Image (cartoon, helix red, strand yellow):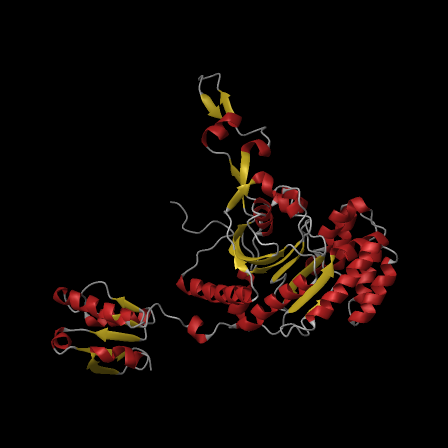
Length: 463
């Protein structure tokens, strides 16, 4: 018998789950739109060549690739069996690139870059978009991590001004505060500063990518783990780099910036990165949503290879990993066309936000205790079905959420069902009530019931 469990790393969303997700998504949309961002959607799958080479070695390994279909698959797998003289499918000894031409979306940033490159003349010079859709990664599931999950992205395309970073940081901070978070930290770093730090630590330029991938795991595997990864990859300089990170970890920002400036010396792009961080802090100080939450953390690496400048990440104390992150990727859109277009974005992880909110009990009562309807209408007999449906229609037209018990049944069973789904009121519409144009209205939470004119039902329920 086939299993009824969803595929590993995915999950079903029951009504209560969906209501909570919609609540969070609604706030995210509302805030993004208040900052002037427009909605965008892209297909669930992309051409494989669109995604290949954009995420670094580890990202490339985690893509869900889609087999070619029908005749196209048969062309690369067709062999003739000498024993029976029939065509068979043989997948061995065939390159993956021959078998696959599509892949599920790995993130929402690369699809955005493709859209901008493909529609540059139709889009405004400064294009601000948000996108809330699922992505897929062939990762090992862990707490708050799934193989299918939603990202809530916000990006600004067309400007290299650091005002963009300040506004993005302000937007995501506003979202988290509206959701009830008060202990989050927004960590800030710069890829050019990181490159200068790596160079000053004695790490060769060709080893930068591997070094950043290892450093990105610092909060998960610790200094010893990072050192081991450096050794396994044949990278020297871990001791110098980790010593620097330790020296600036617990000092005030101004002192840390001075130490970093001295460490990178005359590395011009690293000094520019430091200046960028200083300006972002200055701009952010004017935005009410950002206060003590914004900190410079030079251990932040962000593993994706397309980042070119500022990188950002949000953390809360009781969750390993982040609630979201992002950064500047000025070279990505140019990979799809002749024009280099600057861009910067931030992505919130919906699943992780929901995990923390659930564990902390952060959902408001009207969401946490939400019910499928405001009132249930009973069906007394086959002859009264039309009257029950007519009353339901009247109450819906007055703005109430109404469910109808689907068949004639004993009143006790109908009440028991109403209680099981948490409906707060039940309208009993029997033959007597119908004759007198009344209903018997029962409050399922207090047990009280009263007979009233059917025109008064909404007034009583709304109190």
